Image (cartoon, rainbow, N blue to C red; front, side, top):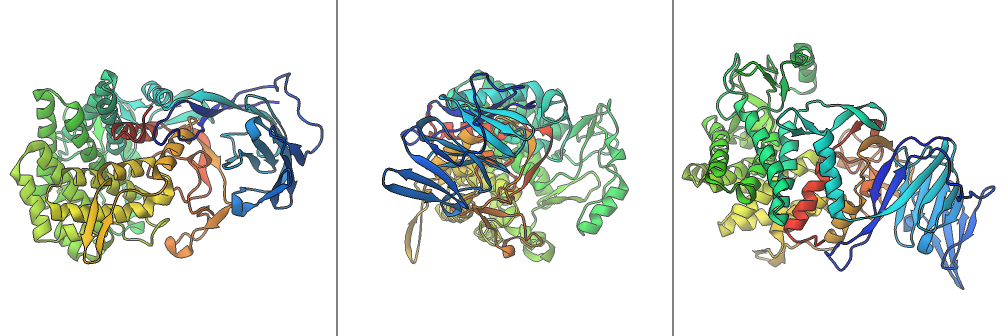
Length: 606
């Protein structure tokens, strides 16, 4: 019997509101044979008495618990994930484990946890379970023995784990762009290769933002060092585009860079690919070369930079300037770089213009397009929000009235403030594009932080409240903390009265639970949930062209983070079947940013 991959995973409950101490972590360990002290039961087991004397029974479509004269019946309505049962075992402190032909289920009396796929088990066909007094659970499966081990951990320790992993594997080039890596063999992290992406600036910006919050919250000099390195990496994306055979206008930032000592990326980004993309997208930008060479001949830089890149850049620059840059030289470097990008946008009629003299596919923010071109109606609200946030950040960092005047012009003459009032043009929770959600919420955070006009601020906080309401079921700590960080204590008044826009409900508990359950195993294992009994299909009208494979639990929330694959916060939490073949290893930056953000705003107290 063989078991082939290790996994770490976090469990726990909130202690005293925002105070978080040590909690239980689940970790899948590599084993070749079962511990000699572990004895699997002979034959199928369908009834068991737990450590509290309660009798548990497996029935068709239900789990029954008899506690003296009291009988409780748990079905999919109460959260039972699946019911093709094979066995049951008692665990620690009244916990039970249930085996099925498609995974294992842990139930502590209030929370159901579903363990399926190579992230957790050698095989989904669970034939027997044995649980040790310390909570370690052993599984006899069709393809060998597996162990899920429980260990104590704090969020501080978890953050250090991810930062060490990023420093070890996930920094690409001498500038340290943070990105996932590709594994030579599924689940084996001993050998990996790095690669570029369309969004090196966005992902490195969000990683750097987390380190800015870390420095602001803890004063850790290593956090400052990491944040400063992220700034230099993003600044290089602006300087590398200047000069060379195909220079971009000043202020243009590249998507990514690759060393010219490696393969020529233009051979794969071919004109044939552009033509194929153009058939799918009538506004697709055809540009050659897509990867020009830098002035010093050492780098290829990627063109056609999008609005999500700029969202990540400006989100980071504001935090770096406020929290990290302390010397005059450091602040001057930020001012000069931010001015260069903002000037580019103003000088090119609020468009990001490439080396060919034409705007990039998504870098369009001008009124003629957003307010009057039907090709851009769906981007009107988000791109209006983005450009206002860029200009507000530029004004804050530089103090120049140039950016304030441009900002007011878009509002006073082109009603961009009204555009922002409805920033998510879709059919409510579960619809739309999660990448757009990530961009919008980062933009709102800085826009609300820096706005001083009470009328505009009232509009922005209301729009942010409406947006966040649609994101609530996604259990997203980044979105929750960004919203609560600026909208807590705000109000909106109109003819119908005054509304408190502070976050309500269990947003804090849900955010902390997500951070605790965020898997330390970042391998892209396949996870399937579409067969589950506790799933409600997403209404067909919510997603054009997508009518199957989307859903949420019958409590109205998406699946917990440990039961789906999460790389970045632009992933789709409503997709029931996710993941790949185990040959990609994501970084942990999407944990670090909300964690340090929560520390900074004191939502988390360790």
